[in-house]
Structure formats: structure tokens, C-alpha cells
Length: 382
Ligand code: GDP
Image (cartoon, rainbow, N blue to C red; front, side, top):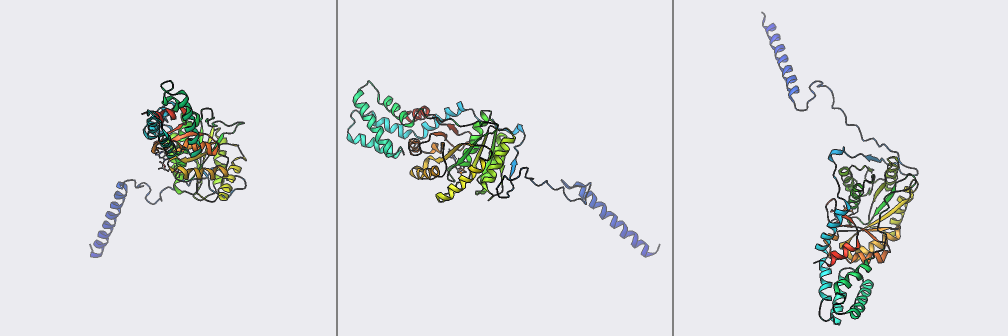
């Protein structure tokens, strides 16, 4: 056989061997598409916005995020369980106020210095100057008249604190709409107060009450907010409507309400952006969100979220928001980390609206309906 034929045979054998090796290698590669090595990987379908922007709105790509299948869902705690924890947490954190008050009132003699000390304790706990003055006056009168063992200071203090906090305010949440539309709750407040967390926790409260909920991530200015809300929704099987960062909040709110109507939801909770801007900007933005929502369904509740640890600063913010939009209830967050439970009294007096919910920690079920008796009792426990 001539040399060149041998050479051709050798090269052909080599090419065949290399080819075979490649095929075997492809078949062994983990996840390798060996059966069709030339194909490109199948593209993941792009998230198609399944809803269109509402009338008069910017073109934004708004999408309804569907929660995962049922087996992975959390079972949120019931209201009764939350109230027990409310009491325990408050007894742990706000106790210095109650203890201080009781210690003062149980002195043998209440001289002027003691009364002044009592005033300082109350003002220090953010009760507010006017409310403190009234409470001290009532206590002075009642303890002087009733005196001795007839009415123990604790009982008088309990009654007066309860009267101050208010037992006859309507603290219920509008959790069902009318005429085939869901109840719509707007959640407003300055960033960092716990607004988005509150929307997530509130969804759990409602799910525990067997309500159908839809969330709207209309805080489109904070990159993480929609993401955060998506996680809250996924955990309890609640759909979250969201748009891209920087998109028009009113558009997201509109689509959330539309999704709520389509799904016959009981409640739509809408998170809003809480940038501290001038009052006009705030009014314009919240006003637009509300107007656009109300093309489909009335806003039944506007909850203002306030951080209980921010004291007077929080009160200033509260006033700005209440002038921009008609607040119907207050959520006081971080009451677990504050010895200043008196803010409950101050904020109600300042805004003329009841505290409806309190945040008591970072846990998913650390939000409870505000219960004046449990609150005052926890304050005086010790
Ligand atoms: P947003 O900017 O107002 O939406 O605030 P976020 O919801 O992101 O919350 C800000 C921080 O406050 C987070 O770390 C929350 O976990 C925390 N937070 C919210 N509510 C409470 C509460 O009731 N107690 C405590 N201790 N932390 C809270």
C-alpha cells in the first residue's frame, strides 16, 4: 500500500476518534442537551404584562405576580393569638412607663414634687403636654377625693389611662367593599417607618380571616419595595401587582384594583411611596393615586404608618400626611422597641383618628389590632 494511502487512513481514523469523543463528552455533560447539540437553549418566556395600563396613565409595564402553589404557603396566626402576644410584648417594652406611674402613685404622700415627676414621666413617654396636663389633673382630683384604700391608685390610673386612649373609637378595618368591588386600603407614610412590612403583615391578618387579598406595589421609587412585597405575597398565596422601578404609582394602583375586581377579592392593599417631599408634591402624588383608584372603586381606608420610636418627629410627619390625604386610621409600628407607648394618645389627639393596628416586632405575624384594654393592662403589668 502506498504511503499516502496509509496517511489518509490514519487521518480519517483520528478525525473519527475525535468526533466520537466529542459526542460522548456532550452526552455526559450535566444538563447538556446531548440529543440536540446544535440547538440553542429554550428561551424562558418573557414576563408578559397580562394587564394593560388604565385610562390617562403613563405606559407602564404592570404585571400581576402569581404566588406559588398551595403546599408552600404559611398559615398566618389568628387575631386571638396575636392579642396574647401584643400584651406580652408591650408588658416587656413599655413597662417602664406603667411601672414609673404606679411607683409614683403608690407613694405615701403625693407632694408637688411627686406630681411634677409624674408629669415628666408622661411627657417623656410621648403622651403630649396637653393630655398629660389633663391626666394629672384627673388623677389629682380623684385620688384626693377617693383617697385611702377605697380606690387603689392602680385602678384609678387604669381607668384614667383607658379614658385617655379611648374605648369607644371604631378601630375596625373596612375589609369588604360594596357593589361587586373590593375594599381598597391605601397605606401611606414615610419610608423606613415599616410601611411595606405592614402591608405584608396586614395581608396575613386578612388571610387568617379567610379574606381574598390582592396587593399593589405602588411604592415604585424604592427598588426593593416591590421585591419585598412579592415575597410577602408568595408566602400566603396572595397575588402582587407590580410595575418596573420608577413607573407611575397610580398606574400600578389602578391595575391592582382591576385585578382585585377581576378576582372578586375582598380587599386590595396598596403600598405607596413615602418620600419626604414638600406637601404639595405629596398631595399631588397621593391625590392622583386615590383619584385613579376611584375610577373603579372607592378607597375605603387610608392607613398612616408611624414609627413609635420617632416621637415628636413622627408627629410632624403625621400632620403633613394627614393634610395631604384623609387618613382614616393609624398603624403604630415598632412599639416593641419603644418605651414611649404614650404616642398612641398623642397621635390620636393630634390627628383625630384612631390607632387601628400596632407593630410589635419584625416577625411576619407581629402586627395586631390595637386593643386599648390589652394596651393599658400591659402598661400597668409588672
Ligand atoms: P418602609 O420603607 O416604610 O416600607 O419600611 P419597611 O417596611 O421596609 O421597614 C423598615 C424596617 O422596619 C424593616 O427592617 C422592618 O423589619 C422594620 N419594622 C417594621 N415594623 C416593625 C415593628 O413593628 N417592629 C420592629 N422592631 N421593626 C419593624
